[in-house]
Length: 196
Length: 221
Image (tube, rainbow over all chains, first blue to last red; front, top):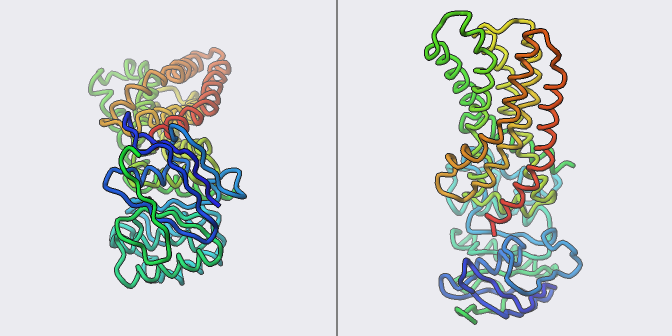
């Protein structure tokens, strides 16, 4: 279970939101909505531990260090244009602690085989996103933080990723997603309003 | 342990191959060495007197070249977020980045240093020592430079800032390195100077990753 208590986050000297409290039970998803600049990305980065909040506590059940129990899929995929998709897949899955069987499972679920020999720079935004999503399949971790992850994907792959998300939730995982559109899996909504 | 090895291989590949890391640094080093006789005159006696100092100056400048790339690209494409969330912590990530920089850029330059010194007329007897001093000094250059690159992260014109921050910190190895070789060339004891370079390299290998991790965390947050 993810617990966020009395969270206040600021960028520069502007407070984005304050006193935010919510809980995310195992097997549930919550979609963070709000206008541009409302702090959706900052909330995800604070939960990931990359952004130090002004005040508040964040905890993840069973994980002393919550970074070991979560994935952050940011706007950017962190893939190097000059390296091949196969090299990037092997590195990022290995960095998350994947074994070869896990990587093979991710390649199969995300249909990455035809991409592996290509340099990342020739891939489309949607293909890069699929490549970046591979580690979520390769090594299970309970909490997924998804920042506009579905935006670059086509209708077919949105459905495929929604299936992945539903499997993850059915296995007791949690999803906290930032999005402008409703996500194609069962979820509650958390709306961020300026200065709340 | 395997995560560190994995990261080292990635960082080495990025430092060595793409963007011409080592090749560019070697070409720059060769250019400075070739310019020396054009600027100070080509009389062998004068060049020989300058050979050691000039090759150490070229070494320090060439080690600056590819520093900007160490964090800036990973910062811009979001990879640094994922590295920060990884299993080894930012201090480990920074240390591995500096080690990869040393192996990919510092060691080729260290091999080139005695060649440049010999080309300018330094005595053959000190060339092995020149190699050793450049290898150890290169380790310190890589760690100190990595710290500068992390401090300049996210600022505009970071490359210039790195040079201004880092070059003064390159003074100790330049002094000890050139001094050691000059002493050896005159038949004086040189072990103390080499030990001082090693001490500086170890000092920066311990301090720099912590400082760099702190400034990277600040840039990400």
